[in-house]
Structure formats: structure tokens, C-alpha cells
Length: 442
Image (tube, rainbow, N blue to C red; front, side):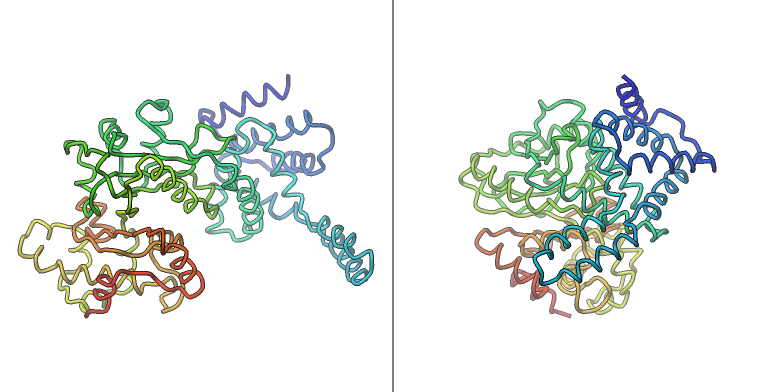
């Protein structure tokens, strides 16, 4: 009964209705005692469930500074015991080459297992415990930016979440207009690429010429982890406003030969570093091919969200491609109402976009991963850069991010593995001949 009451409180606190409090000196000692109880793991399943629920209740009731202190206690005080690790390591070294080696190795692994893992794992025993841990890591990532002492806890928690969210456990679901309203509301909330402006907009994205798929975890059945929006067309789409036009006629999906992935949104900040986007696309492609055997082309209509940020670090590039407008003028987008400027900027802006995708790297050097996160994602999944789309996104966000440019990444089933291996081993970027020529022109 006690555990049940605590679980009820936990659900209320996760709803965000309770007022959060500071962590006092006395509270720190009480918290330390709670954490030790969880780390010791005494008692049976009911006791563990009650302890985990109480600890989650404590965490959710704290203000931001208190939560930071909570996580720092776990990070700094509940690691492996150095003396036990040293003893186990010495025993292992002594046992190498003898029949006792494997037993000593197991003992050393046990000594290196931190109490942090025992504490974190116990949250799995309570309802919404997995969601609690995902949200807890979202907090942890914020604090980590200015407190590197939390890195050890983040590494352990990311490792646990990667195991719990293995793609083998995830369920692919197609979302339709008849899906639960609460789920549809979450899609509106989580859409990170092209804002869903209204219920009419959402209904348009769920029409017969569209598909929307999401991955779910069985312990978080009401929370999509990542979702992809697809348009069924007969051409390589080049403009997102046209693609999302609510007043455009519905395309006859029986004539579709192309699937355009125009929005991919990760919904859980706490799962950063846990990758399952590539598996989502593969599963979606298989599902689409089953329903629409005529589909031959699978491509994206993608933003270049970090292009303006890169250009601020490399302002000389504007002059190199022949653009006289400033970065601020390009980002405002008012030039798009001037027909003469629109004509004159088509070629240099397209060259700028191609050069950005071909050569902009993290760290500023010639080696390393692409600077653009969307590019890293699709190239890392075996796509190739197919086409630069001038004025592909004329929204304020589109101009701020990439001066209205968008890009098509093409997933060619015959080339995916080759592209992926070349990118992973050599950093080689697969590009169409047209884009490669654009990138080389100055």
C-alpha cells in the first residue's frame, strides 16, 4: 500500500503540478541516506520498488539547483570502490595464464561495477520509471554543459539507456488521424523541423498521400521516441511550402513512385546519443514498399540547420562565391521579394550550399565529420547529396538557418551500403555529379 501511494505521488509530480523546493543541508544528508539504501539493495522486490519511488519523488520535488546537487551526489559518491578495484586487479594479474583467470576477470568486472548503476536500475521497477530516467538525463545534459564532474554519471546512464532502447525492443507504428488525440497532440508538440500550425495542418500531413510513422518503447507506450513524416509523390520535391500546402489537391497515391521524408523529429532530449533513426528509415522504407510496390525513389527534403552558424565562422566564403549581401541581409530574407536579386543570387547561393555540404567540417579543419547535423545523420545512413534547392524553404526559420536553401538526400538501395562504408571509413561524402560540380565552382 505504501509503495502504491508513492507511485501515485510520483505520477502527480511527473505531471509538474507540485511546487519544487530547495535542497537544504539536512536534506542532503537525508538524500545521501536514501541513495545508500538504494545502492545497498537490501530487501525484496516490494522494498526496492518503494525505495525507488521515494527517491524519484524526492528528485521531482526539488528545484533545479537541488536536482543538480542530487545528481552530483550520485556521480561523485557512488562510483566503484578504488580499494576493491585495486585488489581485484592485482588478483587478476596474478591469475593470468592459470585456470583461475576467468574467475578473476569476472571478479574484477564486479569490482568495477559502480553503485550508480544499482541506483539507476531500480527505477525500472516503478510505473513510468523509464520515462523518469529519460527526463532525468535531459536534466543531466543541461548541467553537464557547465559541470564536467557529471560526465561519469552521464556515460553510465547513456550506456543503460542504449541497452534498454535497443531497436529490437522498439515498435514501429503508423500514426493516422484516428490515433488517440493525446498522441496527436504530442506530435504537434514534438515536431522539430516544420512547425505544425493547426489541427488542419496536422490532418493534411495524415491524408491519403502522406504517411507518418513513429517508434515506441513498450515501457513508454504513449511517448513517440522519433517520428518521420512522408509525402508520396511523382517527383523529387524541391519546396517545403508547396509540399505542406493545405489547399493543394490530394495526390493519387496509386501514381506515386517517390517517397519524400520531409521531417524527422527526435522527441526525447534524454535519449541524445542513443541512435535509432537509421533503423526507423529502413523499417519505414520496407513498410512503404509493401504498401506501394511502384515506389522506386526514396529521398528527403531536408534543411541545413547549421549553415548560417558555419558562415558566421567563415564570413570570407560569401565573397568567394560572389555574394555581396551581408549575412544579416541574407538571413532576413527580404531580398526574396526583389526579382532581380532572386535571379542574381540563385547561382552563388546554390554554390554556397554545395560547398557547405562538401567541405564544412566540425572543428574547422578539412578532416572530421560534417558540420551540419542533418548531413551527418543522412550520410551516416548511406544517403547521397542529390540536389540543392534554391528557395526551398521561404519561411523565416528557413532564411535564418540557410537563406532559404534546402537539400535532397537520396537513398538508393543499391548504393546505401557502399556509401555508408566509404563515409564511415574515409569520411567520403557521396554526391551527385551536379552538386559536386557546384561545390567546386568559385
